[in-house]
Length: 223
Length: 223
DNA sequence: CGTCAATGAATCTTCGAAAATTTTTTGTTT
DNA sequence: AAACAAAAAATTTTCGAAGATTCATTGACG
Image (spheres, rainbow over the protein chains, first blue to last red):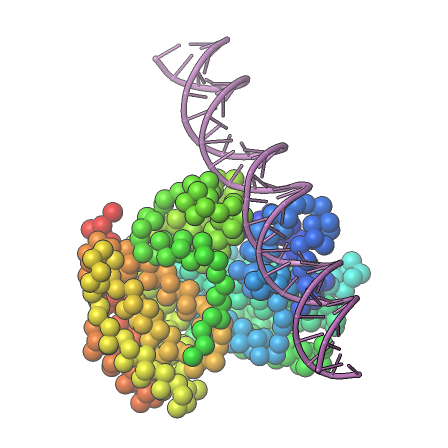
C-alpha cells in the first residue's frame, strides 16, 4: 500500500507534469519562466525547481541560458524507450516471479481487478483518455514487478513507463482511442502467478510490442 | 569522440559531485544551503539547482522542508546497484556487439589501451585513488556498450556506473587500494571484438561480481 | 517527575528585483 | 541590397531578504 519511493512534488511540478503528459503542452513548446510565473501565480524559484525535476525525469530539456522546452518526441525515441522498457520489464518480472509471495499475488490480482473495472474511454468529453485507466494500468504493471526486491530496477522501470505513457497520451489526444486488451493483461498475470517466468516475459514483451506498433503507426501519421 | 549526452554542469554542481563521489563528503552528511553558499561564495539559487540535479542522479536526497543530505550507502544498495548494473550491461553489450562496426572496435581498442597506460595508484599523495584511472575505466566500459544504439540504455548505464563508482571511491578512500585486473578488461574486450556475445557478457558479469564482492567485504568492515 | 504546549532559533523555501546572457532589431558601411 | 556592428529587448540566472516550516529549548501543568 506504499508507493512514493521517489515522489516529491510541489503543486506546480504536478500540474506541469500532467499538462506535458496529457499533451496539452506539445513537444518542443517553450517554457518561459515568466509565463509560467503568471500562469501559476507563483515566484520564479518554484518554477525552476519544478522544471529542474521534470528535466531529470526526461519530460523537459534545459539548454544553458536558453531556457526550458518540452522535450521532443520521435519515432526513434519511442522505439528506443519501448525496447529498453521491454528488457527492463523482462528482468524485473523474472525476479519478481522468483521472489514474490502470497502478498505479491494478492497485489497482482487486485491490480488486475481494478484495471478491468474502469472504463477505458473517457466520458468527460475532452477526449483525453481515461486518466483513471492510465493510473490503474500503470499500477498493474508495477504490481507485477513489485516483488523483484530491487528499488533500483523499479525506479528505472517507472521512468521508462512514464516516457512510454507520454506517447500513449499523445496518441490518445488525437485518436481518442486507447488500446485496452483485457485478455493480454489477464494472461500476463496468470502466467506470472503460475510462476511461468518464460511465459510471462514472453507475453509482456508481446504486450509492449503491440502497443508500440500501434503508437508507431499513429506517430508516422501524426505531426 | 562525443560525450556530453546528458551533461549540463554548473561549477558548483561539478564540485559537489566530485566531493561526494570522492568520499570527501560522507554519506548522510547534511548539505545546508547557507554553509554551501559561503563555501562556494555564490547565492542560494545555484546551490539549489545543483543539489536538485544531484538528487536526480541519486547522489543526494531531499526531504521536503528538511533539506538535502548526501545519500546514504548500504550493503543492500551496493548489491542492488551492482546486480542491476550487471543486467543492464549485459543487454547493452549484446546489442553493441550486434550493431558495432569498425569504428566501435577502434573505440574499444583505444579505450583499453588508454586504461592500461595509466597508473592505477595515485602518487599525488592523498590516497584518493587515481582520478585518471577511474575516468579511463569508466570510458572503457562505456566504449564497450557505445554501439548499442540506445541512448536510453546508455543513460541508464551511466547512472548505475556512477553509483557503483561511488562505492569504489569510498572503498579506495580507506584502503587506498584499487582493483585493476588488466587481464579481465582485456578478455572482455577480446570477446566483444570476436563477437562472442555470450562470452563477453559472462566475463563482464564476473568482472562486476568480483569488484562487488571486494567492495562488499570492505563495506562490512567499514563504517 | 513526566508530559505537553508555547516560545525561540535554525533552516528551508519563496519572492521580487538586479545582473548576465541571448535574441532581435536597428543602423552603418561596402 | 548584403553584411556586419552596435544598441535594444526579451529571457534566463542569480542575488539578498522576507516568509514558512521544522527542530530545540523552555516553562507550565498534571
